[in-house]
Image (cartoon, rainbow, N blue to C red; front, side, top):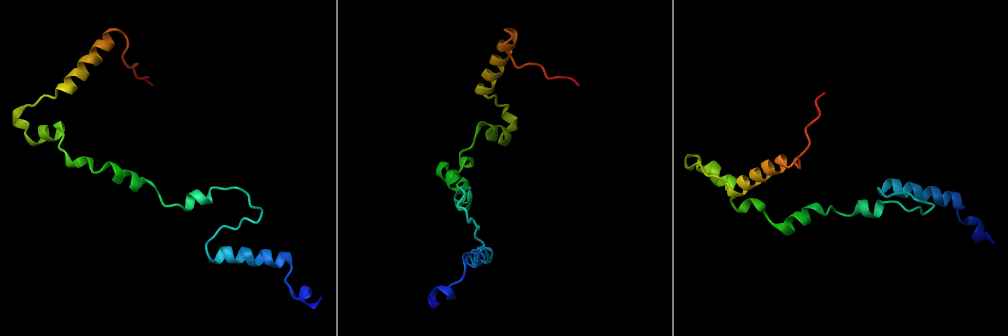
Length: 102
């Protein structure tokens, strides 16, 4: 009987757990309610995903060549085709709607 009386009460144990969580920077969740802490503690996945695809700036693009050699007056055939398609769509009333004027 003396052993049971010497044990701390449930409320005292809860206070100790709360204090431990505060000291060690953990979350205190006595009712075990689901929350997003498990996911929020994980490291961010963005840098790992970016490293998978590699550096996109390694290969020069048409814009780069146009910027490096302005005297050549280079014309991007893809951009020309895109602009022609935009004009054709507008003729058929399939283009983007006009912006609202306030």
